[in-house]
Image (cartoon, rainbow, N blue to C red):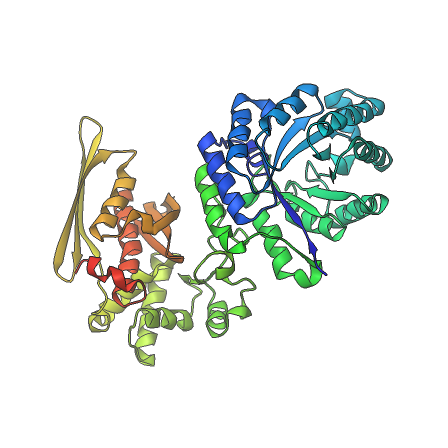
Length: 521
């Protein structure tokens, strides 16, 4: 029978220690509810003794979250433990997590304590916590650089004092998977009745691999964070650990209770709240994780998804895979998008489209979006795209007023009909107001755009500004991309392209029939 692996999520504690991240009280409560809904087993919610804000957050979350084990961190001091206990007063299933360093480098240079003092501290303060809270976890900070014989004494002392879970973290991301497997297996065999936990950092890029090695070694709990945020290079990524166990259950013989269909949503929420942008090629939740640009890969994917995707996008909460149009794309990708928009074509016409597409990719862009492809088709034969409303930026002008206000006037053209947008705003709000105004023009509710996944303006080669917008609408990913010598023009065109795709697909019945009456004619 497969083994259940407990997920201790430490996004709100270790994740909040990432340089530059500062969760507000509101943020912590919101994220705690998302994590509860996600299905993690334990939420490490705060380090209450570190600040009044942390203490208050722990108290509030304890009142709000009643279905999960809630954990607070504490050093081996009376003050830390007493504050943590008070912070968990409202928790239905409280856990206190006590830690102390056990490596020689930490004991000599940071704690200035000898081995006996460490052992005494472990016994005294685990015993103290046990008097008030039944569920006590003890961690050996920098365990992987500790002497095994001494660490064995520390674990014995913690268990005797009442610890129910023993965590052996790779605090500085030092070990490699085989070492960590042997390390965890050794202590699991020494203490077969004890539940061991792993907590791995990513300094060498091995956090997830080490956590999985720890599970193979016999650990029953993994400590991780959403998007892998945390001290320095971060922690084991929850989504990577969970999906590895799910997709390779044949190998790990383990499972979790995490609802993987909610991974994408919580990942994007954490990205938005923290300001830590996810790299495009990030496993599981990155913008390119289910996107294909190579012609060979696109052809295989279109014939059978499993040829190049081991995870279906739906498994993590996305609607579908994405075909990215770039210099390496082939006719299979182009024809699939033409069919998506109900565009009729012959093989001869497809060749013409492909040649024009290649010319544009070579001369103007590294890759293009779907609406740009449709515009290519329109130039070759506008009759085949007559059913698709194609919105063009006809003209625009902007002036900067003395009161630091920007006045922007935009004219958009679609099938000889003109639409006008007039915006007066500050420089800081200019791009946000442009986007909102275009949404309003197209009668797309802001709530329907779940999140702008990516927004950046780069100073590209040839003195061009390049703008890329990505949006998740109804679980479908749309990309609007444009380049121009003018930054505002690049952004306007990317917004138009993004929203035009949504409108076009609504028009040809690929989205909700109920919203057809909202589409500008």
